[in-house]
Image 1: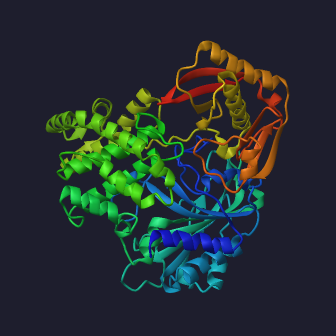
Image 2: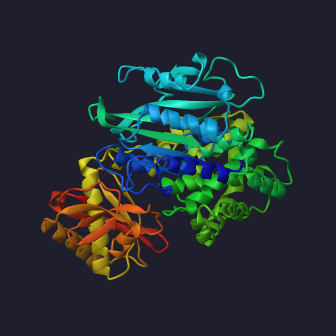
Image 3: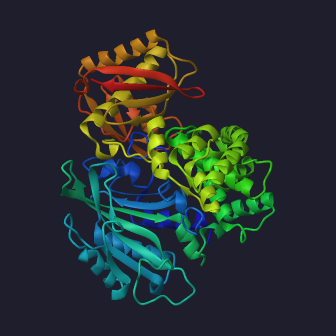
Length: 583
């Protein structure tokens, strides 16, 4: 089975079960600083697990593009990826455990034809915060699962969330498939790697409070997530995701360019294929980042440079990552047409990053050789020097060190990195306090303030200003918009005064659900390049501003206090960035 067929079967099945199909959200979250990237299909939908209603109803499903870097060191094995697609279906206070498990089981065994003899299931073992999930286990057994194929695991395996410090969360029940040619054992063992997780139903029935307690939710919901890459490998009897149609064309391109065989250089080729695919999707995202030393741009730089390093190790002298990008775009352009629209931008940014890295790579490798010639340990400051002066991501230094049997002091590197960049630890997935994920009072106010800022910019600059991205913490808002030059101090003062003028009018904020076409015809603004479902939420600040948005917002703008712009700068070519606070 091809991946496109799997995705179609999935969406068709859940459409038949009353789910509205929604588009994939962007990879870069709109108003959530709790993570740098969208890490799961439910990530953009957190607000709907609480009081807010989804415009398309209580049942939705989609295929969501995701990035996770927590497992970056695992990339190179048969099943781990940084970029992946996730099958997702959700119930917002509608069906619960029994119906969710029955639908999942029907899809796996009837639609996909996976034999029950090769399936196993796990449930939450219980702890001081929540009881053992005997109920889910009973539902699996009622569907025919043998006693030995239903296991109970702890929080590290069978619990999700919350996305931030507080918010909706709950136990999960996971589905595993036996991938070996050997007969599956009667009893499931989570440590046996021949069992591969292919999905899980998260049972959203608690809210973690600021005090750290887990409060039962009155609105109990379901969040299913299943990896496309792993599922398609299982369906084709493969124990290597890189041999599926999602990767094989990229692997063939690597073989062609390196003149080497995948079977002999498996790990390097997997890393190149994975990182190039992730890079193309980050660059080609609705809110696409560019390589840099901060935030999403830093992750992107790590992916590109690590891929280049492995291409060099395979003997490629003239690096041209555009060849892989073109292949990846051609593979995905039907499902994600924005990749083709942004092709020139993607190729240009890859080329620029190649040129930057190639200038320092050889010198950096020589410096590395000098370091390891005098010591069997690379201290944190030297590792940071390789990053700062030669552009070596920490994974690259670690891999080079492992090849020589040398140890890297990554803890001290992290201290140096934090001190210098004020970014995050090595994983670059710093969790901020607050964030939209827990819809705190501060972030809700700042979220509403971005709407006023967006409209104020249009009115003061008298241009077609469109949002190109934003990021909100409990302390400040960051708003990106299209504009061709730096704003003058007079313009910034006028924008600030305009926002404060509107706040003083004490206007109400209203939410309406509308068909997308009607919303656009009514003058509602949307984010540039964003995909919206057929029915959307429109937030109006009286007759001042009107935007398509998921919320949350204050009831009246008088709650905002005083708006203050603290910085205006360039974000990228043709894109300006404003940082502001409320006092």
